[in-house]
Length: 93
Picture (tube, rainbow, N blue to C red):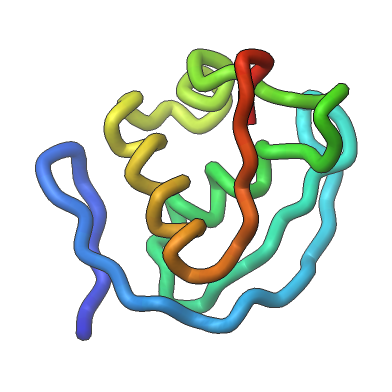
């Protein structure tokens, strides 16, 4: 299945997570790269750091990635569906 992302619709396939840690604007990020996900989703994941104390709010993710809020939320949903634990609380992701 071909994977495509835009603000109107997100079609996905799942892949295998590979740890490719990189520093984010907010601290050390856990940046799994999933080959079958759209690059935008991997970009969102690169900006979500590990640890509650490093949580990133949705509005910051939108600013860092340049994606629409709905697309950012959908990418997080896709990542969770692919088995990547993305936790959230009142502080952010």
